[in-house]
Each structure stands twice: as C-alpha cells, then as structure tokens.
Amino acid sequence: MWAEDVASRSLGMELVTAAPGSAVVRMTVRDDMINGHDVAHGGYLFLLADSAFACACNGHGPVTLAAGADITFVAPVKRGDVLEARASERVRFGRSGVYDVTVLRGEEIVAEFRGRSRMTTQRRPDEGR
Image (tube, rainbow, N blue to C red):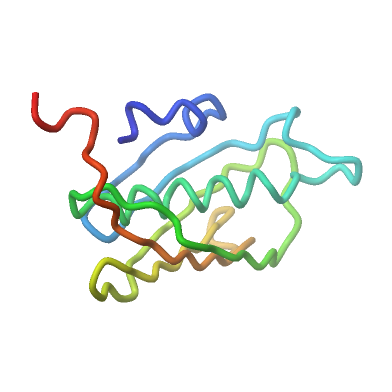
C-alpha cells in the first residue's frame, strides 16, 4: 500500500515501521506546510496521523479504509520540525477497528488522533496476479 501512496510520499513522509495493528511514519515540516500564523497547517498534521493510521489498519491484509477520524492539536508545530506519528490498534471487532495515533516532536506530544476503520470487500491491486 505504501509504495502506491503518492500523497504521503510526495509530502516527504517516511514509513519507519509497520506491522499488523501498528505503524510509525515520520515527516519534516517544510516551508510550504506553514500557514498565515507561521505554524504548520493542521491539515498536514492530520494527514501525517492518517497515513500512520492507514498503515496500521491495513497491516492485517484486507483493504481497510477510514470510516471517520478526529484530531486534537496539543502544541504548535514550526517549519523544520521533525514529526513522528505512532499508530496503535486499540480494538478490532468484525470489519471495524479503532486506532490511536500520537504525533510527536521528539518526546513532546503535538497532536492526538483517533481513527475508526472499516474493512472493505475490495481487492488489493496486486491480488489475483
């Protein structure tokens, strides 16, 4: 999945680790991610957390999409900050799951994200070849 994720990779994200139910994704905040208040636009933090969430919930195999998510911004982020999003599975039930993602700058928490996933019946592009 990561190899085909043009959106995440085009923002300079790096998949650090991935396993069923967990993932770590890293990103450096670039100049083009800064808003009019001279801090990182919250959408980029959401996207980073969402990418880690996607890797964690898709690690089980079946195509899994977000059913919903929310984020709490804890501290402002500046250009040049290196952020790490650590995703972990809280629970899976049926075709659904709940995942928490903590976004850190070093050891400082800058955002907390909770995602809700849903497995689809869709096949992965590389299946059946």
